[in-house]
Image (tube, rainbow, N blue to C red; front, top):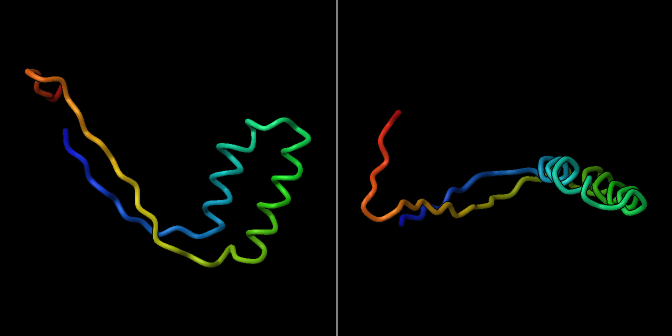
Length: 70
């Protein structure tokens, strides 16, 4: 097992778009309207601001097996 941390830069506008596409459709329609308004407000007020994030990735393979290119 091996892990790596990947750092990247993102804007609030990018993050709001991710939430709009990935998570908003999972809410009931009445909640979608409210949450979409929150995302619009966030983008309006802070959309241009960027910040650093990181994500940890975990790489695993079964014991005794090796990965070979196909």
